[in-house]
Length: 257
Image (cartoon, rainbow, N blue to C red; front, side, top):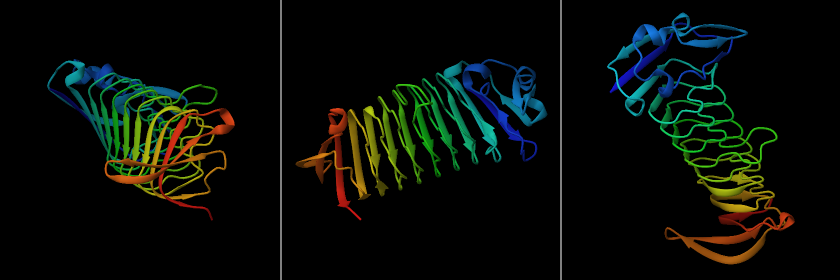
């Protein structure tokens, strides 16, 4: 196995765009080659070694390559963008677009993540062991689909627009979600263990399961009795009828207030 460890040399206020930091780009490369990989630092490019201490152990194929990032990466964007396999572990917070467009592999974030985590991902797995920002698993402006495949697990809370424009895959949030999760969805599954507000607006397809309280259910959903999932009984709603939607919304505690 090849293990590449990156440790931030200093806390940075200027954003680093690190879309080149992925197993696809590091696999099989020697330490000097990885140190020379270019990243954007503000409006200029510089080698990775100017910003990170780099340590490389072993040499292997991309599926057997792991990147470990130590330090507060809350100003480091696009880590793991488009990755196809391998593994990334981030021991700290991370900035926007982490794992966007990823096709496979696994990213673990042992901290909080800013917005667009796993945006438009097609496969693979992201585990966030902190809180997420806006548009987790969502889509970029003007795109018809956000997340298309794979799985995102958030072991904390997320902010608004969870899974916006989602077309496939699964998102599981262990805490609460903000406003309008599953807005404009066209497939996939979202599970929210905590509470949320105004879910599944204009959803055409997909399944949303909410195990906490729901505030302000949209009037464009039709109640269809109950449904049992994994031994838990839910109220079942179908919609959004405003867009002739066939989505399924399952709720354990519905309160309008």
